[in-house]
Image (cartoon, rainbow, N blue to C red):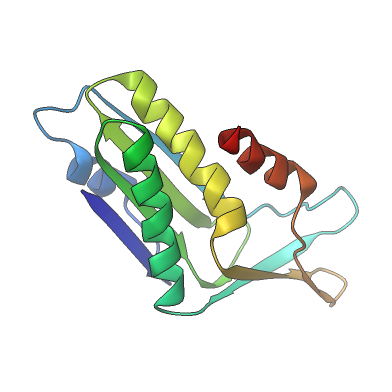
Length: 151
């Protein structure tokens, strides 16, 4: 059971957890990503713009969720990613996995967010306090986290 959403509006964490809760669930693990105002100690972020290709993005997210479902015995998983212009403190992403056992839910959630960071077609541009706009580059640490799941 998958729930994949790409949307501009915020999400309701309690409602998303309730969607995953069934009598067979022993644990639900989740991760919420938010917009940070301080990128690297030198650049103040005033907004983050997220762009994507509709259809392609949802297909990529569904493939990531299917991989998690193939690796762990899940009763369900959710990926919600926001797009548009977001401000510091706003929610960006929600991933969750439900399973009869906590270990599977926790591992699947870590897998989902690690793969989402490198395998989902989103483009991010930071609006900085100095008036500049900078595209967010891929990070080696994100690539390393994803690579660890391949081993």
